[in-house]
Each structure stands twice: as structure tokens, then as C-alpha cells.
Length: 515
Ligand SMILES: Nc1ncnc2c1ncn2[C@@H]1O[C@H](COP(=O)(O)OP(=O)(O)OP(=O)(O)O)[C@@H](O)[C@H]1O
Ligand SMILES: [Mg+2]
Image (cartoon, rainbow, N blue to C red; front, side, top):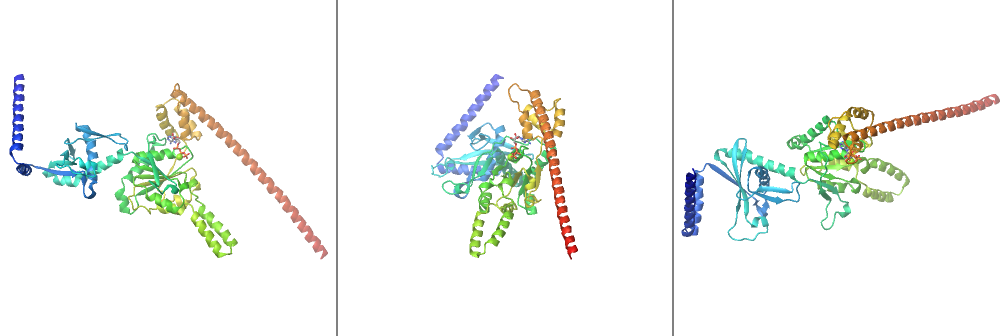
């Protein structure tokens, strides 16, 4: 056995030796041109016999050496595949990604892929130029990198029609999934000019809230997730119905019920960036338009506390004021000047905002969510929240039993407990926000266990219940007092009327007697 192995090695050694010798002879005795000729046509001859087809995708192509989008997408796609299969990987540390190290195939590394039963071979290659040429592009200067795809010629149609499309699509999706999401906030307009001025500043968005950690009824949660998924996949649908690819949400509910947490969860679910639009620093509608036009697609535009940041009654107030002024100012010239002054002072108006929501900027890409939040839905102008403008209204309310269970799981790792029943009853009788429930559930020291935390919550709920009862009693007492006062007032007025009536009748009688 060992003999046979030894013989095989010896044979292999001699074959390699012969090949190397032949190669050396070929390089030494054939002139350069002849060598190139043989290599070129030899290649063609082999290609003629081979049943395979090759397609290459170069990294830099076209005018100005733009980095090819296809190359980038293929690179991402193959990185995803090759980090499992290939043995030679290249690591790049990327600052702008949540995965701090990105692995890709090293040069001359091969990866096989299978799609719908068809086998394909990818090789990453590098063509090093013989003469040292100068290039503005450092990546291009050290050689041109490209990917070579090899497949059987019977699959030509499948590859060109389906497979390549699949690779590019998948590659782009992986890029979106992996990219670091950003939280943008608008800069006040006095900072828009000058060196490196920007309308939006951004930081990395790393909010820990996700749909898993969000406490609400599971049915409602699923409904929202489905709605979002349908929206994000609805490119063709929105095109078909001729609407801008955007969707408006209104989140309303008392403070601490999870409106901001829900927005973070939505961004996490869709992998979108967030634009937090602070309307109070936006001077007028023109600025608002400039800001909105600069937002990129795949983003959520958030306007928090819409009732506070926008003077929703502004227009009406202004009209009233104008009327009074018209009566006062008889001089038309000074009136015009006043009007103009008022116009330039106009803040962002509701109608300006509504125009943008209705899709003025739909030209650049779409795929945007617009989310408004408010604590007082009843204060909002009906024009803002009519259907079609706000596609979906989501009420976030006090903590229910299902929501509590999510919090108990998140904060204490318990999914059932004898105290749950008591808590369930108390939650039905008392209004407590998820934020308060969470606060009470959180262990206050290292020694506190789930039992103690749940008891703390029960105590807090009972206190809240008692306070609510007292408040209701007090409200009732005040109401009764007020009604009593009103009754007394009415009675006093009645007496006055009676007296004056009696006086009138008396006077009339006197006149009649005189007459
Ligand atoms: N539904 C919820 N699920 C999980 N955690 C929640 C929920 N609601 C509130 N919380 C907790 O309470 C904190 C405050 O919640 P959040 O900021 O989302 O409330 P909000 O509704 O936006 O309040 P506000 O109206 O004051 O802006 C969060 O950091 C989170 O920890
Ligand atoms: Mg909030």
C-alpha cells in the first residue's frame, strides 16, 4: 500500500516536472509575439470545443471610470455565498456598516452557485496591466478586477434572463440589509450656507426598539407588520395605480404609550433611514420643500407632536386678524405693506405640508413613509387626517394584558407566573402606560427577582387605581358643586326678572289709572 502511494507521488512529481520544463522552454524559445498568438488562439480553440459560456463583469467601466453597480451587487451577493463556501477570503473593515468586517472572495477564488437547479461557477479575477500606467483611481491602478461567470451553453437564456437579474436584485437587497441606518435631523436654515453646509445632519441610528420588544396586542402588531411589508414590496402596484410610492401613518395616544418606540421598530423592520423633521425650526413652506426634496428614498419622515409644532389654526386666526385690520386701516398703501410683512412672516402652513404629502416630490424615487405623532388626535385639523392623506391611523393606548406579557418577557424573562392573573385584572381596571409598567417591572437592584418586581407592579397598579378613584370622586364633587352654583345663579336671575316685571306692570297700571 505504502509502496503504491510512494509510486503515485513519484509519478505526479515527474508529471509536474515535465510541465514546468515545457513551460520554461515555451517561454524561452518562442518569441513574445508567437507566444501571444498561441495563447490567444489556443484559448479560442479550446473555447470552440468547450460547452461553457463565460460572462465577465468589470469593476470599472464606461466613461469616467464609474464603479459599476453590477460589480458591487455581485460582490455583495458572492460575499454572502462565499463566506460559507470559499476558503480564501478577503476581509475589509468598513466603518459605515453594522457588520464591521465584510468578507469577500480573494483573487482567483472560485465559488459555485446553484439556482433553480442550474449550477454556475463564479471566479474573481484580476487583470494586472503590463505597463505601469498612471490612474486617478487607486483601485483601478493596481489592476482591473472582474468577476467571470461560467455556465453551460444550454443555460444561456436562463442565465441572461433570470439568473443575473436574481443576483443583482439579491445583492442590492443584502446591501440595504447590512447598511448602517441613519437618523437625520434638519439644521436651522441659517446654517444652510457656507463651507460644507448641509440641510440635514445625521448620526448612526441604533435604537434598540423592534417589533419583538414592542408591547401591544399581537394581532395589531401583525397587522401593522403586514401593512409595512405590503408597502415596501408595492413598487409595481403603486406605479399601476398612478400614485406616489408613499404611505402616511398617524400614531396617537397618551405620552409613554410607545409612539416613538413604534417608529424605531418600523425603521428596523423595513431597514429604512429616519428623517426627524423638527418643524419649529423651519421658517416657511419654501424651506420645507427644500428639506423634503433632499430626503432619500427608503426613508421614514417623522413629524412628532404635530399639534405642537404646526400652528394648525394659524390660517384661521390670520384671516380674523386681517378683517379687524381692514376695518381699522383706511389707507390702502400701508395696508398692503402690512400684508406683505405678514406674508413673509408666515410659518409653515398646514396647506403647504399637505401639498407635499400629496406627492409633490414623488418624482425622485418614492418609497417613503410619513409618520405624524400626537397626544391629542382631537385637536388635529380634519383635513390633515382624512383618509387618503393618512393611510393608516394607529392608536397606542394604555397597557393591556397582552402588552404586559411582552414586557414581562423582555424585562424579567418570565412568560407565566401565578401573579399574572391579578395583574391582568388590575390592568383592566386601571390605566397605566406601557412606559410606567416597564419602569415598575425593571429590577431596581441586583438582588431583586421576578417575584419582587411583579409585586412592585401590583403595588403600583393598586396605588394608581386608588388615585384614579379619588380623582373621580373629586371630579364628581366639583361637578356637583358647579351645577349647584349654576342653579343658584339661575334662581337669582329669575327673582330679578320677576321683580322688574312686577315693577313694569305696576307702572303701566298707574299710567292706565292716570289715563
Ligand atoms: N408599547 C411599548 N412597548 C415597549 N416599551 C414601551 C412601550 N411604550 C413605552 N415603552 C417604554 O417607555 C419609553 C417611552 O416610550 P416612547 O418614547 O415610545 O413613548 P411615546 O408614546 O413616544 O411618548 P411621548 O408622547 O411622550 O413622545 C420607551 O423608552 C420604552 O422603553
Ligand atoms: Mg415620543
